Length: 103
Image (cartoon, rainbow, N blue to C red; front, side, top):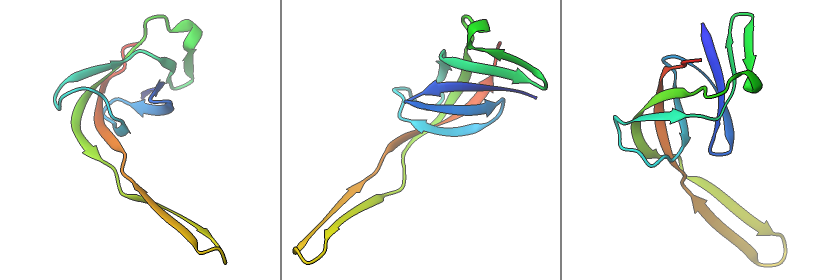
């Protein structure tokens, strides 16, 4: 089964056709098709192609939904100083279904 490694949002993802992944927010509506052009590697069995051999390769996906990730709590505390600080954060994410890997 063919798979690809591509880069988006400062992270790298290993995907195969039909996978559903959660990535950093993309400006696209649900149902829209998106292409990831920064492909680092494509493999099928023992056949590997690295980024130098992949001029113009893309990974095509369909945006399933836009959502917010879980709430993350960061708590800072200095003992005996009367200092504590709580900061919360929720990341905006996009769920993408990989439809094809044309390489």
